[in-house]
Amino acid sequence: MTKNTTKNPTRRHFMQAGMATSAALLSGTAIAQEITLEPSRGAGQTVMDMGYYGKRSEYVKDARMKGDRGTGLIGGSLTPLQHGQGMVTPSGLHFEVHHSGVPVIDPSEHKLLIHGMVEDEKIFTMEDLFRFPKESHFRFLECAGNGMGEWTSPRGQTVQQTHGLTSCSQWTGVSLKVLLNELGVNTDAKWLLAEGDDGARMTRSIPMWKALDDAMVVYAQNGEFLRAEQGFPLRLLVPGFEGNMNVKWLHRLEVSDKPWWTHHEVTEYADPRPDDKIRAYSFEMEARSVITSPSAGMKLNGPGFYEISGLGWSGSGTVTKVEVSTDNGNTWKKANLEAPVLPKCHTRFSLPWTWDGKETTIMSRTTDDTGYIQPTYEQMYKLQGPIGMMHNNAIQNWHIAQDGEITNVRS
Image 1 (cartoon, helix red, strand yellow):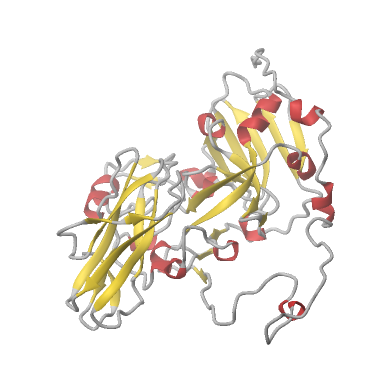
Image 2 (cartoon, helix red, strand yellow; image 1 turned 180 degrees about the horizontal axis):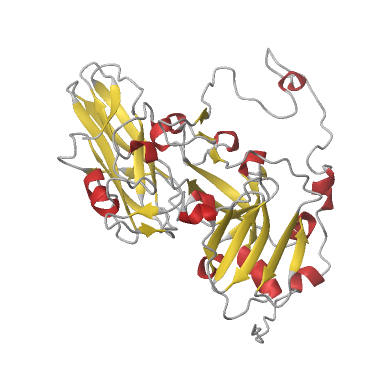
């Protein structure tokens, strides 16, 4: 194997510079600090009554729901998009998918091995990773199977069931490029294998160009350490790529000159084509949007003013436009995009609307900065054929009856 003899002047800088460590994070002293409990100034509960970790109001009932065969998801749970505000998904409501349960991992014992076509193979502890400069970015995640239950006919009774396998968070960790530069990547290296420390040993092939672009190894989400079902203590983040490539419970990265063709990437996460061929490496989640309010399962309380609101996103870049139709796609109006509008991130959109009380169908479509326009189901069928299910980003239609009842329809 030929090694890269071009030295990066910054390599090994972080591991040899003697920076202060974050051992306190592992011992828990930086997590569970002493708290002085005082009675609430208002009538009712005290801080002690509420517990050390804040609770929601008893009047807030939105929650994740388990997947079923109607949604195409068995091992995981769905985000209640219909109740979302803004663009960020609370960590406790972020969708999750697992293939062999959720492992319990002691962060003080967890290791990340990076090996293969690198100059120096190394095992990193969590303490080692905390010493590197951290980054924080808002990014969406979406399961490749989001909406797979909708492919042949409308099935979901709410937007949580039709689109609940996408969420958006602020992720904090270390740039994967920094770690790879620390070890020195061989110039012939083209791929990276990411492996999780779960029972399924989820493994995915990641192209090197992506690893050296915006990929990260992350240990925190929305200002706190990852939750167990989100990969605690460490996961991979490959922004814009299908969810399962963001390998959770990350414990090994192997550098190579070719992809691995692992079990999951050639079976579950492969796209059939009309010519009887299979596309194994789809990677990016294309531009998509959905109206979250009003949406299926809701009911309009008579004619009058309503604000149509929803989410748009694109794994290829930034949402530039979301259009909304309130007359079954005959005409379209440009929706307002709520700041901030960020790349590979959920974007909240809204449109003021006065309902006249007549039966109609509402829908939305996204355009991103590559010029890609969200397709209809008819267009999707031509691309993937009748048995395609993964990467379903077709336009979603909500039918509004004269009595205000909203249902999921195809057209």
